[in-house]
Structure formats: C-alpha cells, structure tokens
Length: 188
Image (cartoon, rainbow, N blue to C red; front, top):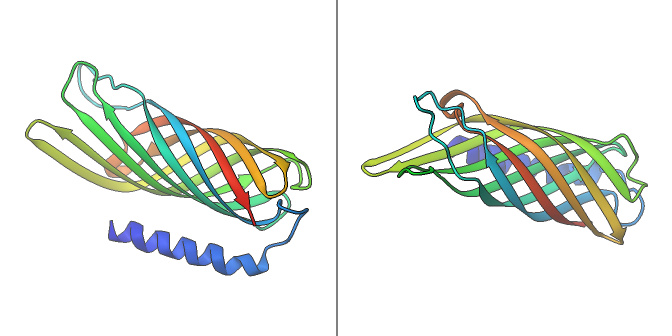
C-alpha cells in the first residue's frame, strides 16, 4: 500500500507541475481536467479451481484527473473503487481498488466536440478476498486497455463513456474484468 501511495503522490505532482507546460486548446478543451463517474463491472476472473467459481457483476466509482499535453494525446490518473464481487451460491466476496496512469490517444484534435480515443493504462491493484474464516489481501501491478468517447457539449463541461479490460499481474493475476464507465469532467 505504501508503494501505491507514493506512486499516486508522484503522479499527482507530475500532473499539476506539467499543467504549466500544457497547450491550451479552444475554451474548455485544453489543459487540465477533473472528473467523476460510475462504472458497471463484469467479472472475467481466471481462478484455478474446479469447478471455477462464478461471481456476480458489480458497480464502482471512478475519479479522474488528466492533462491534455498535445492535441491528440492526454495523460490521466484514474482511481477506481469497486463494490465487492460476490460469488454465486457461495460465501466469497472480492473487493478491488485500482490506481492507474493512462495514456489516451485520439485520431482527432481536441478542437472537435466529439473525441473518440484509445486508452492504455498501467498501475497498482489492491484485491481483498473474504470468506468465513479467511481474509486474504494481495496487491500488485495491473493494466488496462480500452476505447472511449468524450463529448464537449458546451464550455468547460464534458461527458464521456469508456469501456476497458482491466487485468491484474503477479499476486492479483486472477482478477480480470470488463469495466464500462460513464463520466462527467470539468475542463480548466
């Protein structure tokens, strides 16, 4: 957890410090942004057990901070908190939290009001499995890849939707899921 906290702090400092160097696009479309969103999450866990346990889908909260450092590229910090995945017909619950640094690449400049993009991210995942008599916590690196669409209807407010596949590595390699997020962002 200490590594993740240091990484988050370093990412935040870099994003804020580099804001001075950010290019400004049309009003509300360049520079720094903050966002919040809700996620629907579909489990794709890869658990080595026979029979493989099934888990219910869940939901989560997304917090974002990003910097448009080029008309086609954006750096972004993403925090995801997910409500526990609950095992179908079983006592196991799995809670997941991720901290990601993402790179968004768009085929169109930020001067357009509709911006599709591809997303690649890497970060840290905390996973906790709970069952009667068992409380297991693991953390390790994770990644994500996805596609999204940001809309700029007016001024500094924007909305977006994205779908991504998130996967853990090492101690959390069994944790894999598809996340569909609806986002609202304020652009400075």
